[in-house]
Image 1 (cartoon, rainbow, N blue to C red):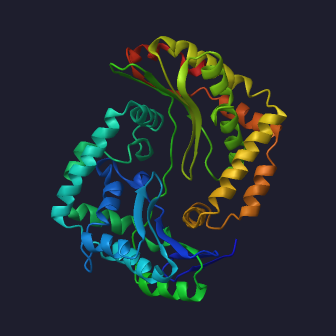
Image 2 (image 1 turned 45 degrees about the horizontal axis):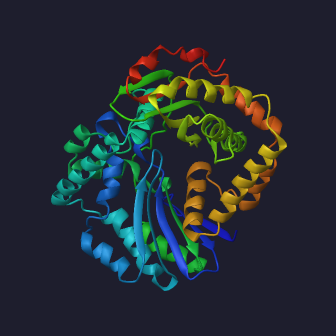
Image 3 (image 1 turned 180 degrees about the vertical axis):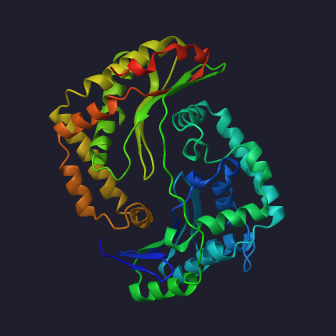
Amino acid sequence: MNVEFKKLDNGLTIINDKMNVDSTSIGVWVGSGSSKETENESGIAHMLEHMAFKGTVNRNAEQIAQEIENVGGDINAYTSKEVTAYYLKVLKEDTDLGIDILADIIKNSTFPEEEIERERGVIISEIGQSIDSPDDKVFENFNTTAYKNQSIGRSILGNKDTVSRFKQLDLKKFLLSNYAPENMVVSSSGNIDTDWLFDNIEEKFSHINNNFKLNNIQSKWFSGFYGEDRDLEQTQLVFGIEGLKNSNMDRYSLRALTIILGGGMSSRLFQEIREKKGLCYSIFAFSQIQKTFGTMGFYAGTSPNNVDELIDTSLNELKKVKYSVSDHELSRAKAQMKAGFIMGQESNSSRSEYLAKCMIDFDRIITSDEVTENIENITIKSICEVAEKLFASSEPVLSVIGPDASKYKNYNLSSLLN
């Protein structure tokens, strides 16, 4: 990696990742997502992200889209629990335009009332679509149960009641209290001169100041069951436990454990549940390793008649992995982790995002060599130890959607992994 970074006097961090390419991928990453919302603000971070493209003091919504598309570029954004990102990709010679548009969006968005009303309907439709999708809703119910009465447990989209109430002033207040420069990173990957880039970004972003104090989020895990009765052909279920935050170096072993259990067609859950027993079409393990929270578990969709056997068989695989991992499984997991990371680093879009998140989460760059070294240092012992530690949990969460789903509340959750 040929990476340089600079912190401006107002606290904003600039990253330049020099690559031998003809395009520039650049964006603004804000260390603030839905986890920074109060209950009454649920969904406002996501709505703010949508509204950023709806007009500034210098450009209307059509001009924002046209100016990027006229030079063949792309512009987009996303909101997660912990981050909101605004990013674009243009040819090298159009980098100045890209920086100007990003700065305009962050500093000068006007949030026109008529656009708020229009986008409100779009987001409410998006919420309805998510509710109607059981494989989405089962995860939402899981999060709601695991992080009860906490922003981390609420949907990024918000709900119809909160989204229906947001006004222009609400959006402006949330922006002022969360888009602090010390909580923002402008990250660029491309063949751009570092001095030129730093000077250009400093000129456009140095006047952003914010005196609001950023709140640190503390998550608390709860065990519980969420059953939602629906007339469906398939029962959807998610089982999970509290995982690791990204400050924990065991996160590399946890990634490997997740791959061994349910990452791909050669994983234990896929082979045992689908290939050998034919209990489902879709099953996978997951781990969310974030700055303020962590979860680990598995998802499956199956016939209502197979739910009990699927849960029992899956939990048995979780118990077995505490005591035995083969050399082949270790090698495969490490190869998947290394290949996924290295292939991602070949894309300047992925690199700019990776570097920005490093600065937001760790306040430093974790180099490619450091990542691959940490992957190589994973051992069978380290995987079994992290499995033993996590699966000792007596506080799992089970979320089920399907016919007569509420009957599974009778599971003794505290003993499922013992």
